[in-house]
Length: 127
Length: 328
Image (tube, rainbow over all chains, first blue to last red; front, side, top):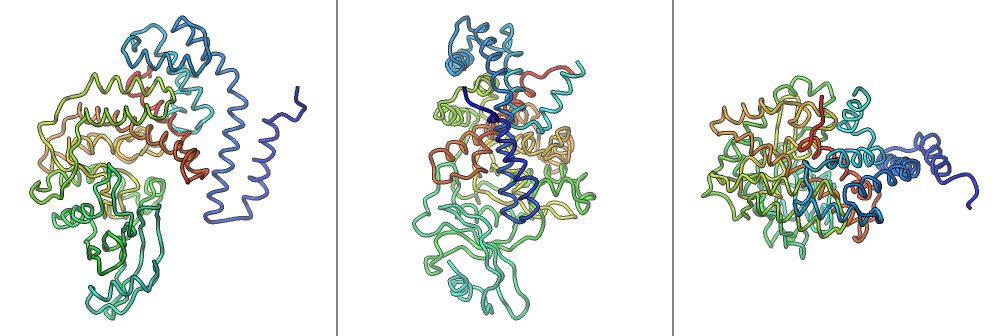
């Protein structure tokens, strides 16, 4: 077992330092690059926070859809093949919901400010 | 390349030029560069742009029309009264600058967020979608006989290319599979009209001023094909920059785009436009995956490229919104 602080806390400490102490000191192209760097650290932090839960739920849904257990990457390969072959489609019970949930979980990590994501999140909250 | 090389070239073909000034590289990879500079002239300096492939890098990648074709298309568009810079010179061997061309520099803005938010564009914004429709119709109406040699694309070929490229990444994406399947099932077949297609008609390639569109740039992906492709591509959500309820570049409606197009005497097929919007959304997603690939294996190990790889999921949510929309 590794000791504290956790990778999430460590990553956040670096991101906060860059954002609060370094960003105000630089400008121009380097400032742009720094913003990208901070965005990366924020993304890593979100993935470390959310990944375990969303991966487990995704694997459970995939096992339900495909009727087989397996590693997430293999389950996704199997799903991709079945969609490509037409064996599964949007009429398949649970497929639409699965694709939506998986995609929402990806956006929550990759780009939570993306307008399409915020719109869909709003639908879930109001619904 | 430096100002000395440019001066030698410019003095040979621009009558009265006495030199060049303010040369700077705007962008450039290994194979293609864009430069801005001023031709110094007693009657007043002339701002110009150089697009060139340095010597030894003349061979175009498969999708690219090539700089010679680009120059020809821009000049044709200019001559037809479309917003396009005048081409001043096509590089010759004697210029010793590689292959490419020099065109007038058009002042204005290409950055979408500024065009969508800055006050100076507020008056232009409500008219841009209609104006783009008119411009697209003009591009599609350029006479075949005058066009340079271009590859011809169809929906089926494009699906084939995207499928091959996506599969080469060897990373399963069920939403992309769904989109490929949808595209194959909804392929409207060969278009009854085959025209010049700009191929990258969107924010970033449009110079816009407070008075509207001033120039259409970057004809690198020009080809022959279904003209509805350009109308679908300009509606892809990735070019709305947050203004998701305004499908045309975040500033206008499809109806305005179509009205401008039809007022210029051409017909819109909305079902084909939707088909190409789905194709375009997937295409941008596949391009994002390609960026990730280049980040990992290529020479460009930049953070920006890495992060574009993580934007493929944006196109997945947009594909779901198009193909499996949820209520309200």
